[in-house]
Image 1: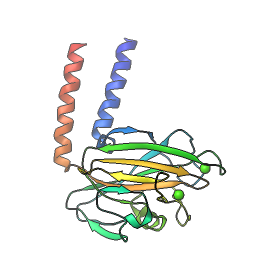
Image 2: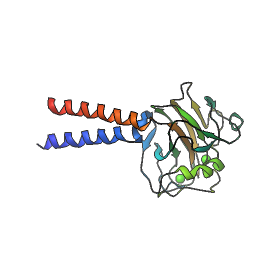
Image 3: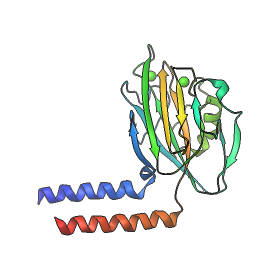
Amino acid sequence: MFVKGKGLLALAAIALIGSGAHAQVVASSGVTATVPTDVRPGAQEDNSTAWLMIESALAPGAAFTVDTATTGLFDEPSDLAAPASVTSSAPVQSFLLWSDRLGATGSTAYVGYLEFANPIVGVAVRSATLDLTDVFGAPGVTYPGGVVGRGSELSPTVESFQISADRKRLDFQFRTFNVVDEIRIFATVPEPVSAFVLLVGLGAVVARRFRRS
Ligand SMILES: [Ca+2]
Ligand SMILES: [Ca+2]
């Protein structure tokens, strides 16, 4: 019975993942998902992993500012476009990826990637653009608005990110010193009806697993 209870919990966890924005991240490396209340420098530190948090869902047609809406390797500031407002006809989800090393001296390298179920529309990496897009942050979370250096300072072989040709994968490399390194990612999400169909499908899988056990 105890084992069965654990199985129930595991299935409930799968259902939760399947029903939420977490389902939009299908694979990752070097990143730990978290639900923080404070993402200012020093609030949540780790020398072995970067952090990922789910932020707000944007309605179709909402305007948001990005530093690039194209694909490829970005390893110097001149690779970025001028900050520009974009809109998406599909619903969009905002995610914050960041790193914060222990303490405020020395430096730590972070390397990893995120794979999304749906295409990345654009990203914010400059401190000013991150400040500007904090309105799409998660409710109740304190952000480092106005903190110089919160963004990602692109530098060849030191700090960079890459968006794959199909826009579903973002590779990153941070060298984090005394502040933080952040990238805010805007990726499309399925229309609600699609998410519902996915849930029904997941329910069928869960039901089959229960019958089998
Ligand atoms: Ca720190
Ligand atoms: Ca930084």
